[in-house]
Length: 408
Image (cartoon, rainbow, N blue to C red; front, top):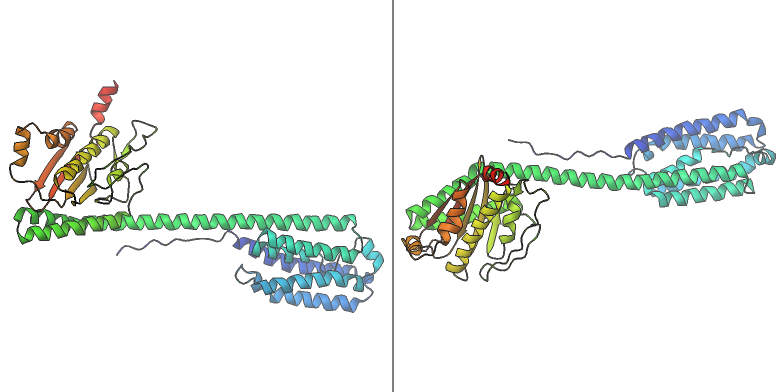
């Protein structure tokens, strides 16, 4: 049994959280080492020891909180920022005034930046701006005046945190876009796999039942018609539909009006047959196509689309106002098969020969003639009261040789 594809995603911000956790540990050790080396400046060393002891325990205990955006809650961020601000505001009570004026560090020192960066990683640049503003106000209060080194440090932390917050927001948006693209790709592959499996089994059986039932007649013909309808519904389901490049259509019973699909930039490039047939779909015309493109040489694709249009014209003229039609596209090895079916009254025996004798050569010229020139064929199967089916076959390399000769 084939395995379903799973979309694997990786958080682009997770390495930043790990770096933040390491930064908090290193900076708390740095702040303690800085305080030990300048212990002679403290007028209340017990206050500094109490704060650093609490800061070390808090940093180590909250490492799981900075493991990711989910665990880093708003309450934690508020408490963490409060501890950083408290350390800054406690500095004048633990250190000497002269040492502070000489540019001495605050008690938490650069550990404070880790708290601001946590805001940036969690909520983006707006949260970072809020946290850095609070830290800036606390530093100005601690210093008593906007000194050059204080302003420099405040601006540095502010710019760095806001920039990081913006980068995180962009990274998250890119991650969401990438995840969505991967999901669409996986779903497309799964749909194509299902389409191949269904085409190799269920659809072929339904198509065979429909054809054999039409030949046998009677109740078998009715069963075959039901099988054909289920085949159309199943093809539509697995194909997922196609949005045409340019389309203007009305109900098939009223007469289709189709605007030509935009020509490709390279006139020799293969054309996706689905884009040429998609405009024919309407309220009474259902289109079932493969999930992947059906490329054909430009001339072959246009002639095949014109033959389909001629077949639909016959449905519109002869099947009645309430008739419905189905277009089925099959991309087989070496050839493309397009089937046009309707649920009209069918064609009486000998009617086509009589029409050709009367000079009305729509089927002979518009459909069979177009495909015969390209090495293809058109088969018409109709049972009175059971509708009509036109099967159009064309080689995938049809029209290439003639096209090259014409260009020469």
